Image 1 (cartoon, rainbow, N blue to C red):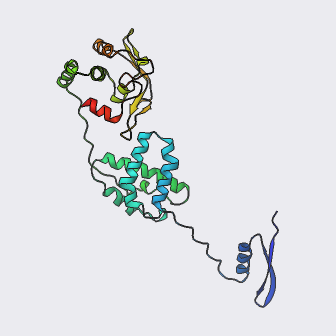
Image 2: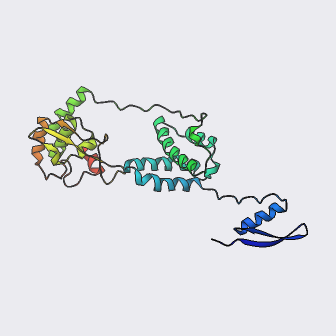
Image 3: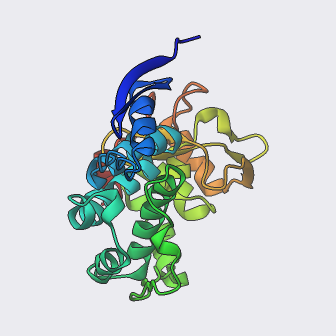
Length: 273
């Protein structure tokens, strides 16, 4: 146990001894006996929001989400949040600052919602750490407005018929197999890219959809779970089986479209063109 500190003081012409566990405590006790107001607590250093937001991204976000999600979060920070708030102290950000940030984002409301989701997580951490008294995004005065996103129209029956009829006109057998898989079955693009030969059961005419291949940074492919995180099966078209036989069955672990490795972003774009 640390020894108490004792210091002599002369108060109103009388010498006395004042004790404390620390030098600061001794000083505070002496000031109190003198009838003086207590010394103000030293001001805490303020935290730069730009550095704080980046620290949140690197420690609490990036390691815990998928690459695609992390890329989306990073984009919101770079394009919108940091240009507007990056030079401010976390403690100094006001509701006016936040509303001005979102008022300055043009385009679809969906973009603003993505930005709000990221900023909300940063503000929530700041509240938990005592840097902000409340999450400004929860204010009843905050408004989020924007244009509705344009829906992607599905292909018409005529367009789908044209795609299917055009499969045989493609010169590359791998391209024919890809289009047969994509056009004739209820599969997303990334699910077609994730099919391995072990997932193709020609005997029962069944496809087993167990993974997806995405390109979150438009470079190296990333193998992940399907969008619903569920494995499922779908019946396989006879037309598709015929085109798959043209390219020859590979090893069970090889990708139907791609071979030993999934196709890169550039290869997918080239094939789809």
